[in-house]
Amino acid sequence: MDLIELITQTPLIQNGINQSKIKTQRQLITGLASSAKTLAIASAYRKFKQQIIVASPNLYYANQLAEDLMQVTEDVYTFPVDEVLSAEMAFSSPEARTQRVLTLEALVSNKPGIYILPAASLRKYLPTPEVWENKRFYWQVGTEIDWEQLAQQLVLMGYQRESMIAKPGEFSIRGSILDIYPLTTPNPVRIELFDVEIDSIRYFDVETQRSLENLEDITILPTTELIFSQQELEKGSDRLQELLDKRLSVVSEQSDKDFLSDYFGQLIASWKQGVPGEVAAVYTDILYPDQTNILDYFSDNTLFFVDDYARILETNRQIEEEEGQWHAQKLEELRVFPEQTFGKKLQPIFQQSKFAMTFFSLFQKGMGNIRFETIHNFQYRPMQQFFGQMDLLKVEMQRWKKQQQTVVFLVSDNQRAQKLAQDFRDYEIYAVETSFDNLLSQQAQIIQGNLQSGFELPQDQLVVVTEKEIFQTVKKKRAKNKRYRMLNA
Image 1 (tube, rainbow, N blue to C red):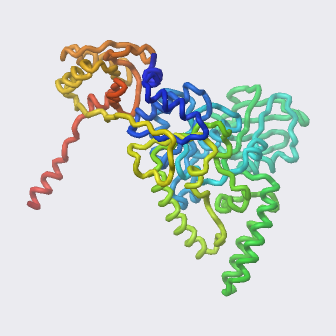
Image 2: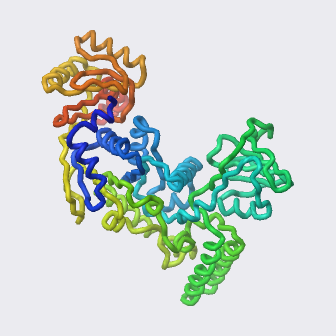
């Protein structure tokens, strides 16, 4: 029995997991926080082994939850999107783009997993799942390639053509050789053709150009989540022209008209030629008329967990406020249109969802107008900090023993486990050393494992203590600050 099995045995968790599957109901789980909530989500995934959505307030909390979940399951995907629109439009790191690409690929491949989605990601416009499925290649030795259309197809997948590739996201074509550097492979790939068939596939070193490893097959994924079909670009150029004509009819300054005509004229021409361009992300509402978002990639029977709805609403308010300011600035710069939108409205997503929904919140307040068919109230206590004081820990251990609690001490490695076991022996604290998947009910035990924080569920007789709570020391105040106060006393 491991931690997930242990927490799944508690009646409230069992009820919550079972009712999370009922599509006609919304349930609220109050009291759970931090790693206790992580284990509850992991329990639902282990039982149903299907796709689970976890909506998170922002990217910071999404990353924290992902790190915690990855300690107990490998099937965790994130879709990082910055809450600040200006930052998201200006720059996207290769790491973030890779995570988004891999998440969309997992979704169209129907992979089960826990998909952690920050609030901003739920608003983001995306290509339809059908467009995504048609914008990836699976090649084997012997596969025939349409060489004439290949360069254009790779451009629509977000790749940039270069004479010689140097970094992920680039490709080059020389004679019958394709060099391509996907975001999702450890090295660039060289593909040689014999006539129209693939003759060889291999990794190579980008610096020396020497071959590293022969491959039998390769999957080439887009370099960005924002990919477009030729049809979308053509129809988008028509819509852009309509917006431009409308704007030109109300602009009085000739210099503004000239700028608009030149700027958007070049963009329209680029789209007609099948080149999205670097600023396409600003016009996804025009290029994606269906205004698809990531939830359209999930089937109707997906479980939807909402982590801290009140904070999600607050994040959404801040996003919309910043978006309005950014839109106004770009209107002054004549680079967007008044009719444009830059994301879906968030509240209708939660109020009119097609999914079975479970909301996590510390309290029942702040849930807006959402009604719940079932409410589960947990008794939860965050684990106190012991700061290395074994006497204090010993007192708590005596209390937990009297209450017949199952106590689990988590340490990062075997060396730390041995040190903690020795400390316990020195202070006559009884705990057995065991493995992560061999926990003992109503016993105190030391195991190797990691969670972000410990907790106590008194009602469910479960205590988890991490080494951070045991050994973390009190930070001393800096001497120079004391001197500063003395000098200014």
